[in-house]
Image (cartoon, rainbow, N blue to C red; front, side, top):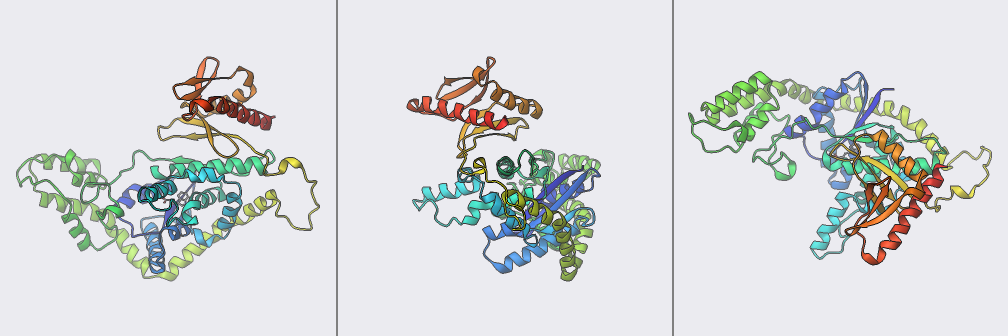
Length: 452
Ligand code: TRP
């Protein structure tokens, strides 16, 4: 089976050069590989969390759809759709909401940042925070799990959300899978080599810094934006340091090696900044002129855009409809004509389950976390290079409970097996060390029982 790659684009704002070089262009390149099956969608339900202006929502969806298609995304080759055209996604979201631990969502960065800001301003902690913001990661989990995606290319700020999707999937599988993995466990994919473009002022190009260069504005507007790039005050003829110049960094993202080497040389031998900006304009315009025309054409044909996205939705729903049916079946939402199953105590959701959750960190290493039934973290492991080794270890430790020891280490508890420290607890106050140790063993015991 091909690797399923899936990613969503929140439909707020007008795309800029940074979005293009950092996300759109690499995603389109990746979608052309033969061994992947790509799903790209406009996350327009997510956009509603951040924006309550209908006209802006409307405009942004159209612009983003046109941007991706004009940039070369082939809707025949990938599945390209609007999230809000797939009613199975919010239905799945509800099934997931019912198993997602509130404690897990309390820890989501975006929600926590909003709470911290309120506390700092002496406001009620939840002031201005919608349930949409709180449940954001569950909707994202539904996006991902609906299509059983393996790889999720995202920015660093989204890694935690992909991990949460994994965590929720594991819990769902455990509760309703009857030994079968209903959901594929997704993994975040961080592309290290992709350019993060600086903006006009040298900080990361971002709408929130108001330092962007719009992607498909006219050639004239592109030129004007480039003219506003901040440079040092070196005069024509004076040597410039390219490696200190964000103008050069942007240039590199659009030029081939030969052009980059020439430009580097010219700057060090006194090219005037005005000239340099002209070169930058040319190299960007060279890449964008054609897509810009296609973009204009697409915006002029909204019915065609609509048709392409409807076709994408049909393709996506071919998978979503039967899969949701299977999931409804799994949780017990079944036709009345089906014979009744014997009710077993163990299927009660209140039966508490602790879990060992494995995930991959930014450093590329693999870790596990031991959490109790409430989703509270009890242990976080050291890093492992090899996910298979980690998987085997998590099974082994539960089978060798008697050989495990827990010892205090500074203000934490350390888990030891075969003389090696495998994991550490969060900081624990002295009086609670014993209770915490007990909680660790209870959780491991529960997991061992599930494995039997
Ligand atoms: N939250 C993502 C962002 O802001 C967008 C998104 C929504 C997404 N659903 C997704 C990304 C599913 C990957 C997979 O960037």
